[in-house]
Each structure stands twice: as structure tokens, then as C-alpha cells.
Length: 553
Ligand code: ADP
Image (cartoon, rainbow, N blue to C red; front, side):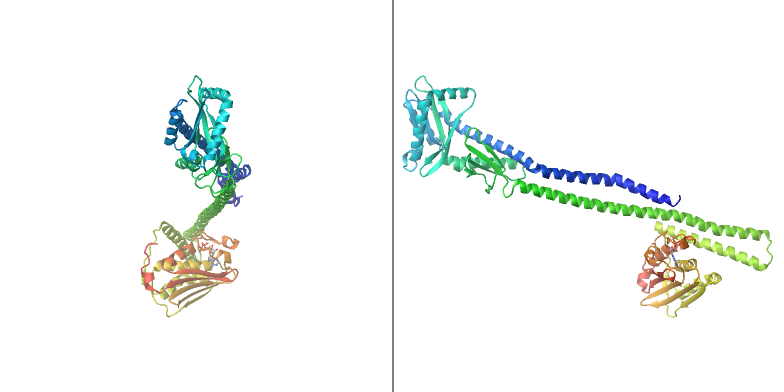
């Protein structure tokens, strides 16, 4: 049951991660994708724009009518009662209102008076319009007077108007005119029917373009980001009569037939330089792209989190293994010491040699205990950032030789062939003696622990290319390639049953690496399973690197 625990914890953590992060994130991505799909299918973007456009056109129509009615009412207010003097007043109105091309009034008592702007009634080129309209209106009003007057009265009561529009000849051209009938006081008892006609050129060149552009600037003031263009055309003809700035031809997105002052015209709106369909396509494509990027980022984040959690869990597992390894390592020498001390205490041993042997065992076990505790203390200092080194000029040859000397007996007693090669030309180095000795002992101790049949330990010290190298060679169990970069990590032990049967804390090599790096050097391993390992400590000769290396690491 025991080894299952970490896997269960891992599964639980992964499940939590999936439930808490993956599921909501996946749901969000899927929902957004579905939403985008539905926008694409229902042409949602186009519909939203079309609603907006319809509103803009309604506002335009309202503004156009409002302005036209203001202009009409200005004329109407000044309009004279029909009678002999009215032609003069009408000419005055025409002179002060250049946007009006024709004025007329009909009263059954005094007949029709039809006045036009001088340019339209005098020049032969423009007279066609004057003649056409004067004959049309006089004929029309005279025959329809009764009905028209009645309708005008009723409309007046309801606050409504009686507009008209037409295409008329002006010289060579056909121009669009519009105007309005209204009632005014007549010479007799009956009311007179009067009317005003907007000047076609004024409408075409000034009024319509100004109104269309005014709507656009109103839109811009409102903060609408998308620029639009508007056009006005005759209801049954697609050639524009007037356009706002930015109109670049092409099919309009939304149209609206005008009601009110200009009944036979149609307003049209579009986006300059593009179409709603193209915009929608771009929007959907960009959104999908963004969604893709977000999904990628999410996946990346999840993979990273997954890796971090796995690493943390592995470390937690290593730590718990460490505690049990260390307890085990402490207990064995302690029980041996106790056992041998008790035996000695009883004084039943027969020979002096036996006594010596027991003393020796007690000493060695205490040494092992001390080494282990020193390792742990060093490790905890390093972890807390409190490890200090005492760098002194040291004869490396002497340091290595003396350190090995105190160990030689133990090595040989364990049946190892021991070879020590110390070159003569190794110069003194500035090192922390104790730390260096501990590194060497850790390596030799590992060589002892991880050798089975081929019992050999070799230690070489020599100068090499501006550095001093210290090698510890064994013919032991070796280390698999894929594990070699991990063995220097704290708590790490190779997952080999041979290793697990050997006592250890997983701290030795991490300490060695730390100590060597604090000396400005490096430690490397060269090993093949079943054939042995070679650990090499390389220390630079350069006294600067060594000398100035921080004392606290
Ligand atoms: P430990 O207390 O386990 O020996 P170390 O940090 O000294 O911890 O070593 C880490 C691991 O590296 C060991 O558990 C072992 O698997 C492997 N190792 C170290 N030295 C040798 C060696 N000379 N031969 C084979 N494996 C070794």
C-alpha cells in the first residue's frame, strides 16, 4: 500500500487542477467558440450594424424634414393675402429667400399669381421650368381647388402638411423640385391656396449635402467609431442625387424611403471602403485567432503548472525519503555503538585483540555518525544561505594525502584495491581545507558504498590546463546515463534496488557540488552502469577567482 500514496496524492492534485482550472477554461473556450459560430451563422455583426444604420437614417430623415419645414415656415409666415398687391410682396420674399425658386397663390376671386426668381422667369434657358410649373400649378389648383382647400384645412387641423415633388425641365436638364401647399387668406371670403417651391440647385448643391454631412458630424460627436457615408437618390433611380463626404459608390447596406418634405427620395447608408459582410468576416476571423492564442496560452500555462506541481511533489517525496534514510542511517551506527559498548561493559571478552577490534568499531561508527551529521549541518547551512568558507593557501597534495590516510585502513579492510596518484607539480590553492576534505571523503565514501564485486578505488590529483583536477575512480555499479545529471540534486538517489539497499541521505553529492562551486570550480561524473564511475573535481588555478570568491555562499 505504501508506495501508492504519492501517486494518489498526485492523481488528486491533478484532478483538482483539472476541475478547478482545465474545466472552466475549456468551457470558456468552447462557449466562446460556439458564440462566435452563432454570430457567424446568424450574421450577428451585420444585424447589429444594420440596426444602427436604420437608426442613423431615421435621424437623418427627421433632421432633413425639420430643416425643410423651418425654411418653408419662414416663407409661409411672410406670405401675403391674395390680392392686387400680393405679386410685389411675393417678389420681395423671393429676393430675400434665394432658396425659393417659385411662389404662387390662387384664390377663386382673383385667380392665380405665379412668381419665380428673376433668373428663372427671364432667361430663355431657364424659362422652361417657370413655364412648366406655372401652367401645371394653375391648371391643377383651378380644377382641384375645392378638394385641395378642404384637405389642406383638415391637414392643418391635425398639424400635418401637404408636400409635393417632381422632376421638371430647367433648360437642358431635368431637376428635382419639392415644395409645399398651404392656405392663406384670400381676397374674398374664401381662403387662398398658396405654395412655395424650393430651388432645385439649392436643394441639390447645398441643402442635401449639408444635411447629410450634418448627420455624419453628429454621429462623430456621439463618438461612433465607424465612419459611415450617406447618399440620397430618387426612389426609382439608383443614381445619387446628393452624397455625404466619403461616399465611394457601391451597394448601400440599408435604405429608407423618405416621408415628409421630400417624399419621392430614398436615403441610403454604407461604410466607406468596406462592406458589412467583409467586416463581419474580419471580426469573426480575428476573434477565432484571439481565441486560439488564448487557448494556446492556457495550455502552456497548464503544462507549466503541471510540471511545477510534479517537480514539487517529487521534491516532497525525496524529502520524505530523506527523513527515513537519515533516521535509518543514524539508527544503525547508534545501535552498533550501543551493542559493542554494552559488550565491553560486561568485560567478558577473552583477548586484547577483541577489545581493540570493538574499540575500533565504536570509533568508526562514531566517525560515520559525525560525518553524516556534518553533512546534514552543512546542508542546512547552505540551504539557509549561512555557509561560510575559510579560504587559505593550502598544499593540495598534503590535504588529499592526509585525508585519504585516515581512511586508507577502512578502505583496505573492506577489501578494496586502493590507488593514490598525486602529481608533483600541483601548486598550492586557496581553499577551505575542511570543506575540500569533506568533498573528497564524500566521493570516496560513495565509491565504497556503490561497489560490489570489482572493489577498486583510485584517487588522482594532477594539474591540467590552468586547473587542478581531483579524480575519484571506482569499478562499482555505475550510474545510468539519464540519471547522471540528477545525482547532484539534493535528496536525489538513483532508483536502483542496489542503491536503496545502501544507506544514504542523497545529500553527499549536492554538498560536493556546492563546495566546489563556491571555490569557482566544477564537479563532473563519467560513468557507465556495471563498469564504474569517475567523479572529477576541477578547481581553477587563477587565484583571483579563488581569492575573491564570496565567503558566504
Ligand atoms: P547518497 O547518500 O545516497 O550516497 P549522494 O548525494 O552521495 O547520496 O549520491 C546520490 C546518488 O548518486 C546515490 O544515491 C547513488 O545512487 C549515486 N552515486 C553516487 N556516487 C556513486 C558511485 N560512485 N557509483 C554509483 N552511484 C553513485
